[in-house]
Length: 531
Image (tube, rainbow, N blue to C red; front, side, top):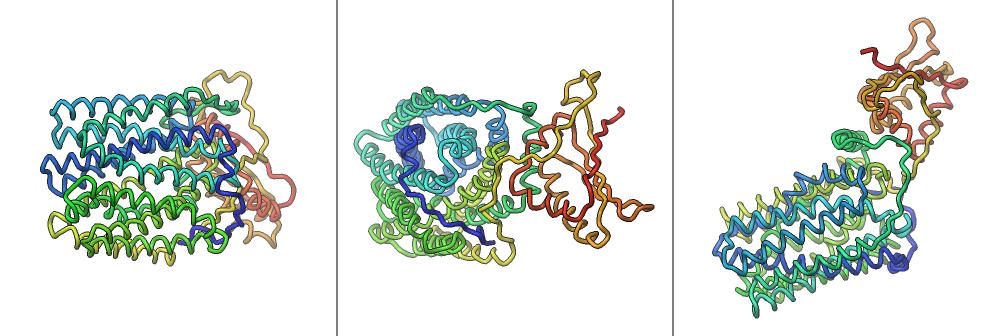
């Protein structure tokens, strides 16, 4: 699959999003928080090794970190599209601070065990999993669409600057004061984010459609992804790549211990990975001017596959550090490109949910891949497991042969050309309880355009399903061959009202194509189930 066959030139400066105060403050707060998070990652991995757990348990640390995304990302995305996103972020940050404090106390008191460490890592990651779709959905609210790639890259730089600094700082803290103090610093790091978010005055948008229920919003997200081929293609490719790419980071603590039995070794390699990611994010801005998105994706995936294989061959810590530098650069390129693709292809009404689906698949691949490569390393050895993981990463480049390319220039801003439906004034029931609703649209089709009309309508049917219909069909009148009837069913009147608000600007050419095949205005009817 080619992620973008119709790329538009990207000219904005990398640093321009920093002119927006809210974005700048949130970015600064996240630097501190992410440094603490990476201190926790290094501390957890080294603590697991200190508890004399094997490679399988060490790899399960990453599984425990990734699994909550599989379980929670989808409902978290649904909640993020329904409730106040600022309040949701505050709640999850408070949860993570509380779990980090418990982890600190049990570690310093000497009551930690491998199983308890995994459980608390899972609980800490659960807060992040519930928050991440909302964070991603908020980004387009903070910067313009033109600055979105730069803002995403700056987030990558921030995150990987923390990846470079956090592990090194963790290695020093663990060596001098112990793992418990590293966990304590992570606990304190949440305070800054909470303060900044609490002071953020987010612009509230007035709702023009009924608020969705949690179950309805979740179903709508799955339906949208199912009938949005471009989004589905990005999710499929990124998930497959991450299944194989997860092997390197999952086995990195064991690689570090083989090369140098010290927390400094792991911190050095993870810091090199983070530094490489920072350099890769900076270099990506100039790469965009010369390469297409697909070329950057292919190059970065190949480089990461080679990096993983070299990590399975080399034994020298300095050489491994150089390899991790290259791997970090490759990692941030394909991760940023996938992230921007998901944001560009998702309308605001479903953005957090689509981000949730993506994170569910993405992190599910990380969790499954980490467990797979950890089990393989236990059965064979670490080095052969990395060779297989690297070869698999290289093989994913061939997906372009099977998966069609989406267009990232698609305009997902709202566009509603339908007449707003009305309901009888005597109806007093809750709109959520009125239904199912049958909508029929009668078209008078020009005889010479019948074939084109049917083809266009089948594409249009996918759009109807994407936005709310659970059944759709197109029929021709047996007595009047120029009369065609489109029918679709929606679960409730409230959902049909929402359906009117879900059309996007990129739907306009398809609707114009349908209209070019017809004569006069189509006749629309709304029928409610009689019980």
